Length: 336
Image 1 (cartoon, rainbow, N blue to C red):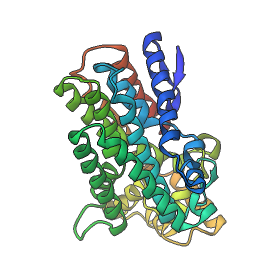
Image 2: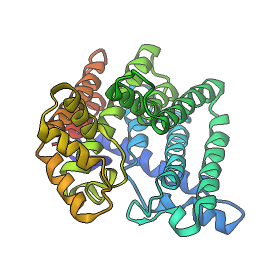
Image 3: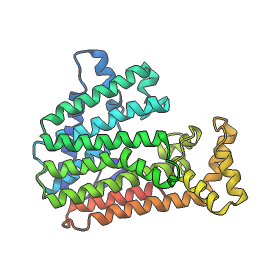
Image 4: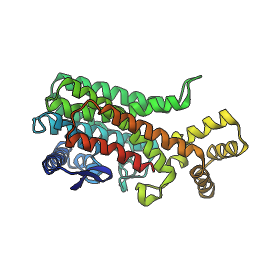
């Protein structure tokens, strides 16, 4: 039994383990090859986050989904490279929008080289992903284009905020479906599709990926509040400090609207204040950790993870399915 991929996923079957490990190694080689340029500076910037590491969550899903067809089919590894390149490109752009200083334990590209280089490097990665995608056929191009549209739409909706009369929690979950769920769904879809799996299997795995992607992001929301920096890999309360209303904050505001309790109102007002002040930030973090809104956010995470698990029911029992189920459990475990 070997641990592979994010969160310590245990692969119990030796043949599956070998396939997954070989596939991920090939993806890593593909990422380095895809981020090379004749211009050394572009290579350095494009490989900045590749070499910083990461969970490789999406390529792992491609490898597991491919087990429902021929995992050695020629399109499997390139499709995983495409998905990860797309994900990496969004990180370059996200760090510019969020004015982030650190990504994956290293200075962010915008911190090191400035916003213009970071944005253009993200564009370079999108271009390289498209180049690889072109060899995978028009259907793959269409799927990627649809997912990319959803991803960008989710980002725009997050920036714009909910429209008048729209429930903020529903709006936020839609944002996550676009920003995170869409690309995780494509990872599962590509893995199954490129392996030649039956169309019904492709549909099942796509639905699974969509729900798992949202659960994955919701778990991050909970971790940002509940964990220490050693556990989460980043400074606790980062989203709070930046004024980003993640699900625990939205659940608190919902409770304020519903019950109007003085202690809830006081905490909500604190969260809406300037949390760049360290003392105020600590107070807000402590208050939210002890508040029922955090537990509600945990329940929301569990709900999406359980929906992902339920989506797998039609698939035949096998070691790959067991690993996909375990990913649901590990996402929930991250949220406590």
